[in-house]
Image 1 (cartoon, rainbow, N blue to C red):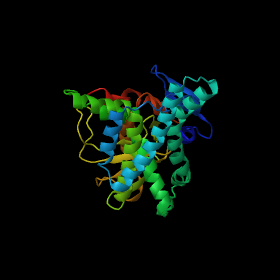
Image 2 (spheres, rainbow, N blue to C red):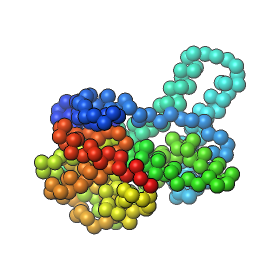
Image 3 (cartoon, one colour):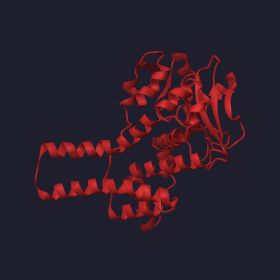
Image 4 (cartoon, rainbow, N blue to C red):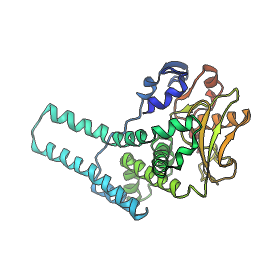
Length: 311
């Protein structure tokens, strides 16, 4: 589904321009980028780490907590099966392959299910058909997708874990649970964010940004970012507002604002706004920024990772 998303920058093909790990600009198939590091392999959770996850989950509304625990139980059943297989002393290449596949794909399949559910929404929004979000179930799916897309990336993980304190045994246990269990916590946090965005949809501003300027929108390996001016590149701090920006194509983007910068519905932006949004997206990228032309990438290449370089 990630590859399908990127094809909107392919000008009718599957080839896009993007920045590489070595800092060059290349043009290649969207699948070359998608193959980088988007799978989330399950790691074994200790009993202590499970306790930490459950305590964090209890801070959520009860309905979300129950969903978290249902998903967690599925993963723990797989972990128990793996443990039983190891203790049995029985070796089977087929069993090894099946367990490995489950560990690599179980969580990714959940993310894929969210991505598949919102394909009609993304296609409609790319055609400026905002009315599709009048369907309550599609809006639920879109907000769930939005939450997971924001929380599943490396920059979000790094920001969440960089301030972990390890000055006592208890803090070490909590920090270890965050690091080792991040594959599950990120999914849990994505669920919570998506639910929060849905619940606040009438208070926040939901807007479609239409870009008919000479500076097309780019996207990145961290495609949903907070573009509010209070987001600092020099210190790690909580911003005053969340203006969550998501480019859908070189011409269309969606933004959820709890500031008053944009008006609900369709907003036609100017060149300076297009430049600003692209620069902020690039500054929170890991490695790749992706565009429909080489020049659209070159203009913002120097901004890549700026937010992640300072604390």
